[in-house]
Image (cartoon, rainbow, N blue to C red; front, side, top):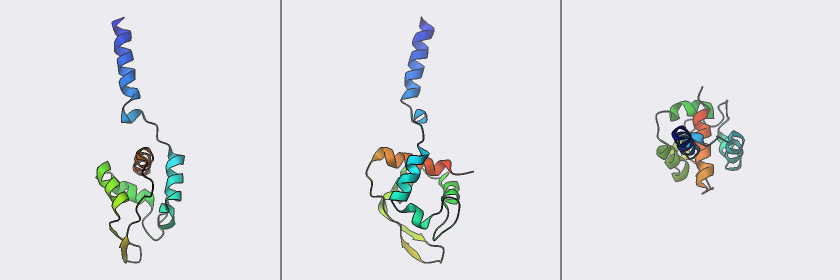
Length: 110
């Protein structure tokens, strides 16, 4: 009986942990397209800006809060031609969609 109680508690804890949330890669990619991210960033190829895969490698050292700040505040960014412009701000305010986008970006690192 104790084993069932402990197992049940463990499964409940896992079900509500961030690790348990499944990454919706298709949803994140659709959001990136809808938000215009893929106009400047290719997933695996550099366009006007670095590819999302190369950006993903850089994200490893940043907290989710820093990535969120970058996506929602419009900081200056360098473009491939050396010019600078303000990064586009995400229009969506859906926390789940944004968290999923961040998780997807992180997952692209090889």
